[in-house]
Length: 336
Image 1 (cartoon, rainbow, N blue to C red):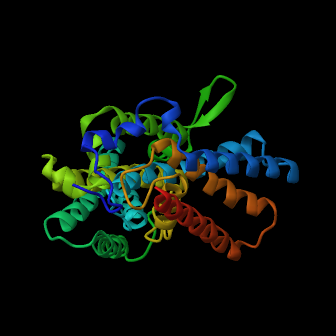
Image 2: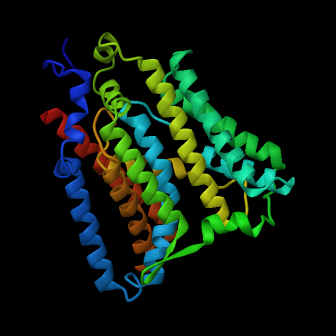
């Protein structure tokens, strides 16, 4: 059995080993490059501005990209199988709105949170079934669910935001937890915990290695006995659940659930994954890289604001970074 380049295809279990053998192996060439760019950019901003390295600004940035990073962890699982999930932005809005509607109808906070997660998981499972059972291209399937999820948010509210959410729910996004000398935002702690859990799952479990294997060579994985359809349904459902976590934290932070929330977030989420070194061809990448990619995205946005760069031109700068990251990924693949 051969892969696209014509080289012998390794066993599916081996396809994930390069991502789990040691701490050094957790960082690829692209991730090292992105980390260097991130540090240089932070150094530039610390010299050019007086506010970038203040504790208030740093923790505000961490809070702002935490829900993007959490959703990006789920997107990573999908892209590792050579798929794509375009519904993440709409799903964040739907999950947050679902929790808000339950709260306004008298349900307690834990039930509302579970309801929001369930909404996100259902969208993710629908994506997985459309891709596996109905054999739709992932791009088309998730483009459709993106519109469906956004339409539900508008239809359920008539286009009006849901306000006056209880304080107990808002604390999920607004609470600062004292850790030593700092007050660390709760969403940041959730992000770090999920990053560790997802990273360990990918690198230390058989199911995690199966995800890498399916992205590396789906046909070889199927022949080796891996249920590739189950793997795909699992990663899309997981993406929906993690997106739901991000959507709930975002809604709790804002204190309002709007049907227009998270519009365009799918671009930021996918960009964080690709910039972080996860290959769009599948089978390669780590959660650590995604975390660095999400941090870089947020510092670019914050830095451009601090430097007085016009807001309307910022998407062009973000788009240029995405193009460069994808070009580097393709160049690296051609060399391999």
